[in-house]
Image 1 (tube, rainbow, N blue to C red):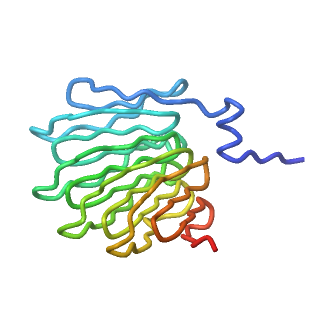
Image 2: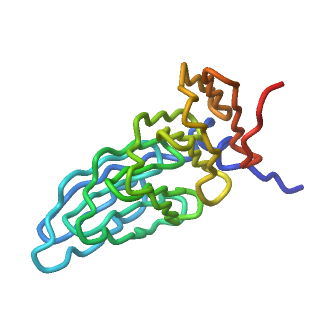
Image 3: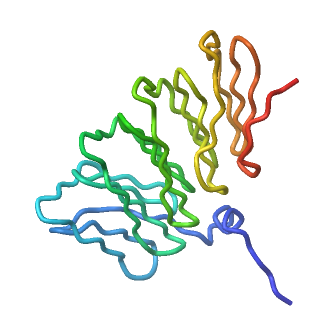
Length: 197
């Protein structure tokens, strides 16, 4: 008899431990509850700006790149920051993290240990960033963009110039965006925006 536990069930039952992120000399180090530390060496003149961790996901912002840590895969993965790209805020959840810069959105899936990036338009600032459970949603004047812990990439839906956001409600797997014109639902397992009718 074989018993298979999903990552979420393992996490809920306490079999999946959390991680701490620290800086030591010229390295960033992920410290899991068991097993050996996982190190990532910093480059010459690379400075650590901030660190964060939640559940099995770890995050480091440096002067030149973003680092995501996957406890499940026990590895660091990086994405480089572009020239004149400045981090404005980040949102860290146990299964994913999203970083907003002045030019792009970067999303990291802990289960895959992989970064995805989405370019923002020249006049497309992120006005709101909401995250809970397995979904983070960014709202710009032009789009609503969702990032899921389960399906790769950012999923966007266009907003009209006369459509204004009234509220954003979230459960662990569903986000509902109410605008002055409609209600838009995004579900973490499907990767699709649906208009409620």
